[in-house]
Amino acid sequence: MAEKIEIIPVSLLDIHRSRVADLKHLARKLRLEFGWHYLLDLTWILSQLDSFIEKKYMDAGAGIGMMQWYLAQQGAEVMSVDRESRAHLPMHFRWHYHVTGLRAQDLSERVQIGGYAHFDKPNLFRKVALSVRDFSLMIIPKRRKGLVVIYNQDLKNLEDIPDNTFDAVVAVSSLEHNSPQDLEKVVLELIRVLKPGAKLLATLGAGRDKDWFHEPSRGWCYTEASLRRIFGLSPMASSNYDRYDELFQALRNCAELRDHLASFYARSGDNGMPWGVWDPQYQPVGVCKLKADD
Image (cartoon, rainbow, N blue to C red; front, side, top):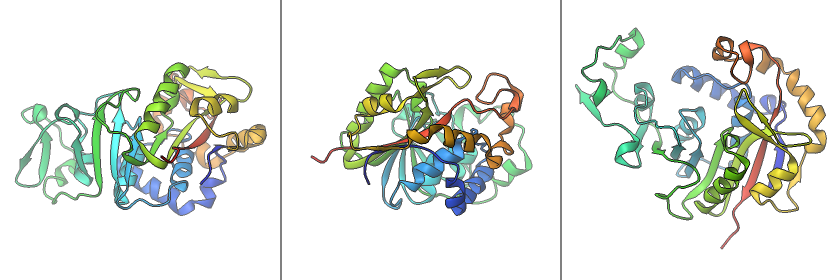
């Protein structure tokens, strides 16, 4: 696959309808909600990957988001990296997947009760209100799929990861939360840990005529020229920025995204869709960068 920049068209939701349905089903199971354009981001990145089984991926800026769990469910080993700590990762993620920490401090230890239920030690003796669903987890054997390795670390300094480690690095709408200067350092570090010939696949915000900062989502939106420079793309890398206005209009008219906004948007005016009002101010763009062969 060649390097490219692609403003993500909403038509992908229909082209990859089966995968979109799988992502929605997994979100319900894991009690996650999508950011307003995340279905597009996830679908685009997954469409660029060749296979999953016995592959090693990094999910850069993963938080507790969907990508790492989806990849693990397909049989991949995923390094989940984020500057925010996930040491006390909720129980239901650990229930469905084999989750471990790269270092002792990256994931709190668990104690086992009756061979089935797993709790963080700090919470073991704290009064906890269990829902019916949580209680059911205590009497059903633990199911494990894939592997997710938690690594709480800034993406500019992945000091515990050797060069040439991963078959792909993916980043779902996370890199734009770095300053433009820091993003250049992040990209270099992500390329370092890729195997020769492997892909860095990232989604960010697209800026039409200039780079600008979207305050509600605290993320940068980048022009084609900036993305080419920051990611060190080949001059031959394709782009569809010439369709910026057309693709943005299609996004604004996308009923599937508009009518299924996550509930958290309606609770605040300080987010990507203030008070749950559908009004996209930017559109997602995907970048595919290949690491040069040695």
